Image (tube, rainbow, N blue to C red; front, side):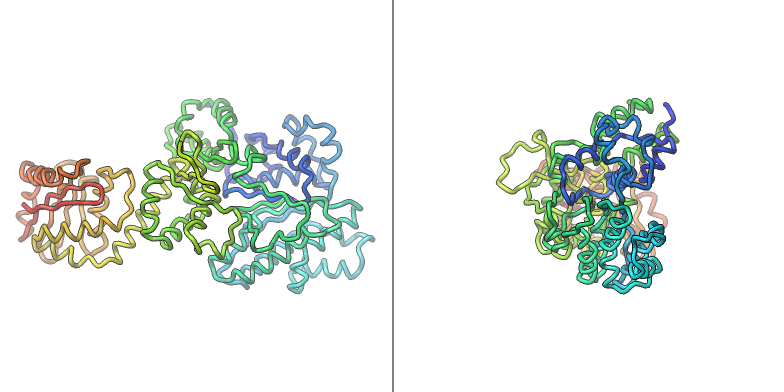
Length: 555
C-alpha cells in the first residue's frame, strides 16, 4: 500500500493543489461551462458529489486577484492554451455559499445570511479605497460589511457588489453561488418558507438583466423552478442528474476510481468500493459518490483491513426518508420492499420540484429521493421492461444507501409498534393462548415493511422488537450464542418467562410442520430447564413464518 494524502473534508481547490493532496482532475468543467456560453448555469446534484470543490476550482481559475497558473499545471484545462490566456485570472469574481444558512426561525436564519453577506463584503474591502466608487456607494458598502444594512439593501447586496466590481475593474463580473437552495430547504423544515423564499428571490435578482454580469454558475440539490427564483433570467441553462453534459465532473467515473486504487496500491478493494459506493446513474455516466470513496480510502490508509461503512448517514439529512415513510405510510410498503430486495420501481419524476409541495403527492416524494441521491435511475441491464412516457425505473444505488434505508425502516417500525396497542398480544402470550398470539402477530406482520427478502434475521428482529421497550427484558441467541432459544421474554415481577423458537419456510403449507419442528427443538435441547428454579411459569412456543404470515403453537 502506498500512502496518499487523501483530502477528506477539504473542498478548497487551492489548499488541495498547494498542499500536495491527491486530486482527481475535474478541470474540464471550466471548458464545458465556457463553451456553453450561458448567462446562468444551474448545476443540481445530490450532496457530497463535489459541487463545492468544483466551485472553488472555478473561483481559482477566473478570479482576477489570483495567480493560478501553477495550480492548473498538468491538469486538463491547461491544454486549452487560448482559453486559459483569455480567461484565467482575468475577471472579477464573486463567490458566496449558502450552505450554512440555517435556523429554527426566520430571524435566526436571516441573521446567518446577513453574516455571510458581511463576510463577502469584507473580502472586497479594497473597493472602499477606489475613486471609481461614490461616497454613497461606500456608505452602503460599509453598512453591509458591518451587518447594519436595511433588509431591502441586503436583498440587493449581491447585485450591488457586481456593479461596484464592474466599476472598479471596468470588466464584467463572474458570479458563483454555491448551495443556493439550502436556506429554502431549511426554512421549509422549520416553518418559515415564504419569508426565506422572498429573501432568496431578492438575492437572485443579481442574475436577471444585470449589465455588470459576465455569467453566473449556481449549484444546489433541487431546481426550484415553480418558485420563480430564476424566472426572467436570460440565457439560462440547467444541468441536472438526468443530463449527460457535466456529469463526469461531479462524482468519480470508473476509470478515475481504478487509477486511484492503482496509485494507492489497493486494487484488491475494487469490488468492495464498487458494491458500497458506486451505482449512481447520472445521464449517460455511471458514477461513484466521491465523498464515500475518499473517506474509505483514508480509512484504508490507517487500517488496511477496514470494512466499508456508511459515511452518508453522518453527513446528510436522512430525515428525508423518515418524513417520506411517515407521510406515505403503508401505501408505499410494497415499493419499499421491492427496492430493499434489490428491485426497481417505475415512477414519474419531476425535476421542477418545490420544497413546500414535496409532500403533496407520492410522485413528488419519489422524485425527491431520486434527486437527492437516495435512489438512482436503473440501467438497461437492471430493468428490461417497457417504460411509459415520462416514467423512470428507480432503484437503490448501492449497499451504503440500502443500509440507510434499512436502519430508517427499522426505526420507523420500532416506533410504529410502540404506538400500536400490543396488550392483546401480551395477554395471549402469558395466558398460553397460541391462537390469540397467531392472530395478533399476523396483524402486526401485515403492518411491517420487510427487508432482507424475508430472511431469518428479519423475523428474529421482528419477534424481539415486539417485546423490546414494552417493560420486558428480552434475550436472543444472536447475542448469547448457542444453547438458548431464539427469543426469551422475561416478566420478572410476575416470575414468568416465555420462550420462542422461530422457523421460517418458503412454502405456505409447511407452517404447521415447522411449528412442530420448533417445539421439538425446545424439548430436545431442554431450553426451558435453566429457568425452572427461578420462574413459576415457563411458556414455550414454536413459531413459523412465511412472508407476512405466521403460526404459533404452544408446548
